[in-house]
Length: 308
Image (cartoon, rainbow, N blue to C red; front, side, top):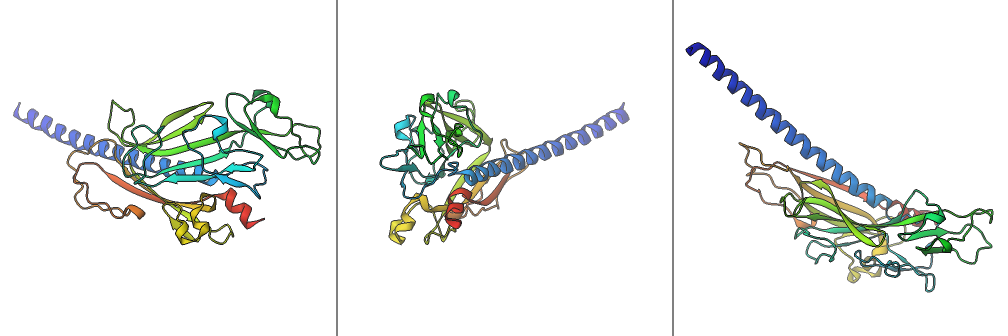
């Protein structure tokens, strides 16, 4: 019996160690997956910002609409005078959050991206939201139209016979919330507030995003390349640096943590460089952490300047 108990105890110790190692490995893998998913999603969205199909934006007066606006009139589009919403805008870590971002974590930045869908919509189905149609026909009386009424989409392709493509407007705001399912947990989470029809819909995207800091690369000489990175427009540095439409790139700093504590682990030494927020202090807790940074170029605004 003594020998049997000894063997059983040994098996239990081995099993416990194996189980703990497996749990630690799963926790680390989940942290890495969430981190790469979150930073890749943000990078991809920023790269597509400002895609307005074949529309020519020369001579426009750029607008910075409230990302919580749900009406067509408040989206920044107008043909007379010619106004278009900027591809990208944001809020600094110290700024107050827009009203439609529930439980935004204090001290984290917010970024708003605008564009149209790559996929087209049949004009007859262009309702329940805002859509853009761009003319390619020299005989059309308008060069573009933004509307939520199917009857308004009467512009044509270059043959002046077939109907031009219609694409839905996309307005997406990315922010860090203090919870994934608010009221049920306290897991910091990257979320997206998106204009869907005439409502703002908030969707959790990646759990464990503890901090997001952002610097914007402003083009000061109109060549499509960022000359200076700032956390927000600053006209005291020059007129070009005070306008959101001159943002050609974004530098992201994102800090991720595991969604649950790791038994036997204590973070007492790690510090992370979060760019404009400086270095973090050791958290002194049992959560694993990982920082990722990325630079994303706004291909559409930059491309229009590089190839006028």
